[in-house]
Image (tube, rainbow, N blue to C red; front, side, top):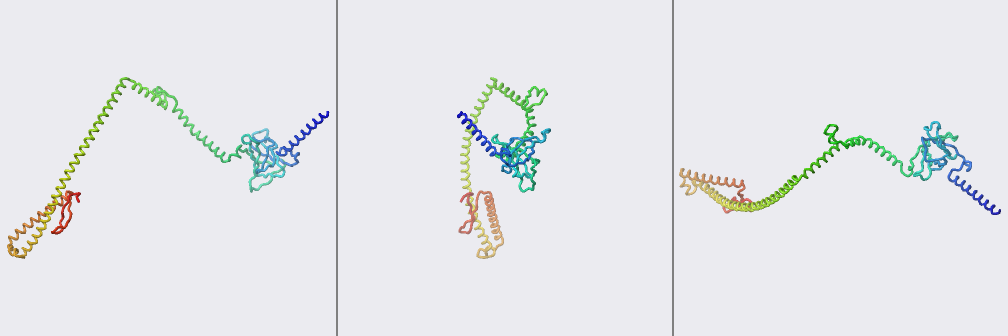
Length: 369
């Protein structure tokens, strides 16, 4: 009897402790009824098209601060479910909600944790407090499950990318149809009979038949024999061309040697010619000087200067001497013109140098020093 009493007492104490712990947890996590915790609350409804990720008891935050909990989820009009859903929230009386506030439902990401309601109040906007008689109403939207992890801009970019991919797919649809028609199997017989037009499949069939015909031709023993003979002839021709090239190189070497010999002989001949020309120019220069001296003497004689001048006062003798000097002068001028032509043609080159009788133009071979 005494043991039964102790057992019943222990069970009762355990039950009381369990109830106390449950009450503490309910108070801690905001799911205790208002009458239990002794706080005052008022109802604010959130209107949405649809709702998901939250349930009764989910936490309500305003700008990050916990201010209440979800009390009920219901249709705005049970006769017309398409008119939307109302989420009734119980807001602690110490937190007024302005009429400019909006609500965002954030479901749990990856199925971990619990969803919650975030009431957002725009800054520096004039507003009035919503009524606390249960008629207060604000608009709400559903948030992305990963909006706290992934930036919203990334979702916008992803949405635009998906839209662009859809447009690209629509653009490629006609191309895919044309490609299907292009690759459709069409026999050569149908194309030749005019039943259809040729496409890639027909071209592939023609190429395949061409290869078959080539294989048949190459597989013919007579054709193979002819090909072997042609290859042998090409090899013989290659050997002959190689020999001819060797002969041509030898001939070129011989011609080069002969050319060098001819050039050497021509150079020797030109050197001899230039030497003779230099001698002739020296003689002509001396003759020219002598002629000039004779011409000066003849003038003296014509003027009657000196003994010979007196003797040559005879007019006929004077004319004969004068004619002789004129012809000698013409001969010297002709020789100078010939040498000048050779100089222009490049056979000789004149160079001025000092002599006993004055400055005389001599010659040197072209290219000489």
